[in-house]
Length: 406
Image (cartoon, rainbow, N blue to C red; front, side, top):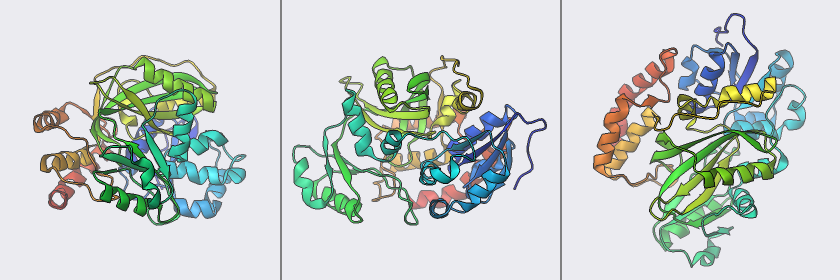
């Protein structure tokens, strides 16, 4: 528990989630505006717990506990009045939505429609939505077993292998990562591994280029605010470790708008695209119907999505600043150090470790590393030093051993 509630707080919000690069900008955004921010489902090692803007931390058990029985959360919401409950990560969304019947009357939550919920947790559903509104997707096939691999014979290697559901809270580890197969033998092993428990996989063509995100705040299917970023250092499981704010591409914004309207979505979302700068081709990859890992960059560039969501859902406000600064960079420092080391050493990823990285020349790796002194850090803020100092301490302690292992 913490006792940092601001004097004369302007409301109270409960944030639910376990990933600091997502929950920390939410805590800071609302805390700076004197909102009393509470936190739950966050393990003790997370850097966000060091924030001076965090008023109180609640012990609510695990996501798996909550899916089976949300009694602790029910007790908290019954005994404390919150203006808004924000599920910040996929497991938090799933835990709330699973128990919607018991929780819906206890506190305001940005609930997903039935269609949006299906799209949020099923890559095949999100691809089908995109195709239905005329948005291009990579060529590929949906497989239930390794025996169906013949259906993708028309694709050339490498191919991308995606679990249809990336979140599985039934076991100890709930995150399933996107993989890449360079030959038929590797493809067979990956598909067999991903489908052994009844899961399905998408095998898709590899589209050259880089990842581009379009993030939005919407109200009943209408986009109120939009932002875009380009991934500079990418991984297959942990998003980008270095990314840059970019101008909105009209064709990508139109694609995001079409899907948002089809879902009649209210809340935030991040649409991920792959863009080939050489050919100009682009495709839709997936959508997150909640806050995203590069959220610190959005806020640093002038688009304060956490506060805008609060104002939309609590105050009914629909008019927000639309412009933002482009060329701003933000990095996930600890993971970016690992990305740089793996890039320099050309380390191959292990199956299921989420560390397939985008190829970048050594000259640019060095240039990107030297810019670290001038880029924004996901954890660092002069008015909230705790998380950044804790991250630096972790870096000093972990880098020697981490570098010898990767």
